Amino acid sequence: MVEQIKLNVPMSPGDVLSLKAGDMVLLNGKIITGRDKVHKYLIENKPRKEDMPFDLSGIVLYHCGPIMKKINSGYRVISAGPTTSMRVEMYEASVIKQYNIKGIMGKGGMGKKTLDALKENACVYFHTIGGAAVYLADRIKNVVDVWKLDEFGPTEAMWLFEVEGFPAIVTMDAHGNDIHVEIERESFKKFSELIGK
Image (tube, rainbow, N blue to C red):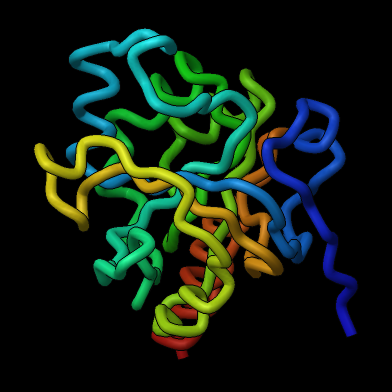
């Protein structure tokens, strides 16, 4: 059985540097969601910290467009699966640097520009489970706040969630390791061997 690392968020640079590609983690604490509109807004409008309802420093930015239900006390998360991370590759390196993000989470990995930003800014990429949106929603214990709900809508808004035991794997670390590239390389090698026979 692979040991799972319990990791509290927000994270410190030391927390990040202790992680390596292949580590399985359970996240506890606060994470935010962000898809295309949030990333574009953060880079093009450069909001000041005091203009935002919560601090992004040390936090995990989850590529997720959750399905939310309005309830008497606020909101409840119905579904919270990851979206494909490469869709925000053009923005991610700048977001990491400008907002001191310490973790990115989604599915499928990201490109070299983001990998370089992870290394330069002590940040990691977490790959979480695709196809398990309801299971992941159950790991969200509290909807703390939301930003840009009226402007972007519930799927594209930035939600601040409190999570407990949220599962993920470090697939791109702050030391330059990228499991996605390794798998692609091995797959191509195997494919080449197969078609060569």
